[in-house]
Image (cartoon, rainbow, N blue to C red; front, side, top):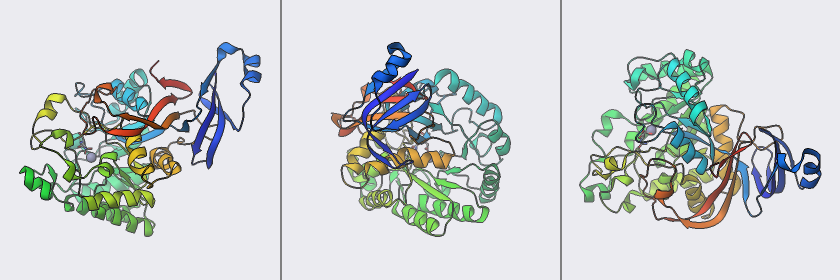
Length: 434
Ligand SMILES: NC(=O)N[C@@H](CC(=O)O)C(=O)O
Ligand SMILES: [Zn+2]
């Protein structure tokens, strides 16, 4: 099968291309990227029926996005999301590869669960799935999992996401094993004893709503600890969902010291402050919480200055009933796969924080490097994981149009720019849904 993507504005950090090109795909590979590819010459050779032409005029053509932080709720909580529905949400959001976190029920904490996830992904998922395994048994923090065995079964990273491993000795040993396995540690940074019953950012707004606050130190203390452990063990540390200005400062210090540290920011954390939470509405509740203006500015500057490497969604679907509860009672988390690109365009590219090239670095090129896969590139010979988007298209976010089962977003009705038009995985169009 031949596919030709015509006249698109190619943005590809791997080759440095930033201009109008045609791309020729043969089966699952990128064969040619050239200023002009003559489709008539090709159709006359292979026949019209084995050649698809996609017109990408006035659209951006980018390597498929890679999300290092997604919660699919299968197994165990399929009413919130399944592998199938989560993968469809990913495709609709321009993501061709996603890394599901292991906090399912049961947790992905042994090699059989990794194998199960990969088997299920093959059956049900229209995007690539790279498994992340839990660090301790059942994520209870006491007993280290078989990290080397899980890696052999296809695990691409370890994480205790949803919480931190509070026992520093166990965590240090996990980092040693991650180094031996040559996989990154995806760190959720939250000091359990400091957070208590905190439900939103500690500040004026939490007082106004009468809610228990979560201070910045809850995150910062563990960010600092984890960086020190990465220094001692030589492990590759990736800091998840950074939300505070001091997280950015610590990441900069770690990079200046040449440590193997990378960091992600979620779209909600650069889009909104805690002050913008209108009422006790749990669609504004996530962990870490929406922070102060000062923190949001530091995150945006950190992305701009390439201190922060990745934009990841932390897509965390929950049932509508659960999110109808008050902020103090509802579970933490909001969906993100289908709003990430538009929020990045609207809040960062259109506001002058990121160039389109940086957007692609943070949504595709850098995540591929961090998770260690040969993706995030539109160079000839690479797998054809591609996203085509209209970055000018203006519309209002509508949760009822989400492919995700989760409708829990604070961005319903928000006016944005940037729409995914086509998502291609391994040379096949997966969105629009076939
Ligand atoms: N981020 C969240 O608010 N929730 C996540 C857990 C996590 O990513 O920490 C979830 O699993 O619901
Ligand atoms: Zn987390």
